[in-house]
Length: 283
Ligand SMILES: [Zn+2]
View 1 (tube, rainbow, N blue to C red):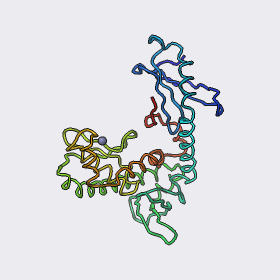
View 2 (view 1 turned 60 degrees about the vertical axis):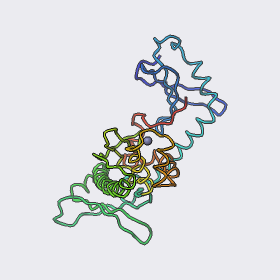
View 3 (view 1 turned 45 degrees about the vertical axis):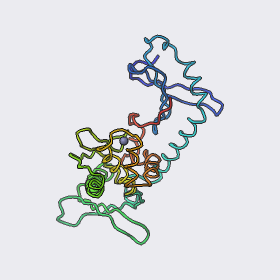
View 4 (view 1 turned 120 degrees about the vertical axis):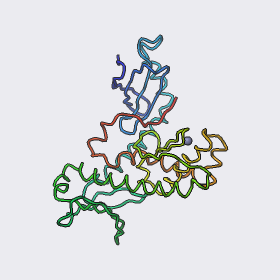
């Protein structure tokens, strides 16, 4: 029996073959809930065993999973496909492939010029495709084997590029929407690309810089529009569409690439150890 917070592995025979899922007991849970986590697969959350009727949820869980097997298989296959695409790119290594501004770039690790004190990053157009050059000082180049240092150098550069791109998008769209945002914070949230507070501040994921510029703009416009319309009613969507009529396409792009963008800087081993917090829900 799973205790609160723990994850128990279960296996179930379904018509499409065996399905493995993780059973989680949650004190906050009131009903059965199924989530697909991009990394960990199917997670079934149920109330604590002490809650009336939930001591033995196995039959209930089975009924639920059997009824939704096609949906589950479809999403599991999609995540599996994304995972193998990311693996094939090689990670943050010399020669690896990396998505930036929506386009794939070749990563190049180069020794920094003598006397340079900090590693730097630059984007270059090359004949056979765009490249991102990491000019690494001796110490960082030595650490490149562990991949963490180049990833940190790259991440700092990406955050700075994200800040510039977001400021530019705000400067373009805020006056047109008649809003003046307060604080703009860069975050690394997993469940949302951006959020707006009633006090007028906005927070956005720096990972939007990995996506096409139109996708970043769509999220910025979305949050700016919230400074005028808090909910997601027709007036809100009309405001968003007034600035980007194609906003839905970019929201779809972000949904389809969510896993890729969130795993972009992870070392391969870490990709399986992250806690689930950005799955897809089905009730
Ligand atoms: Zn919203």
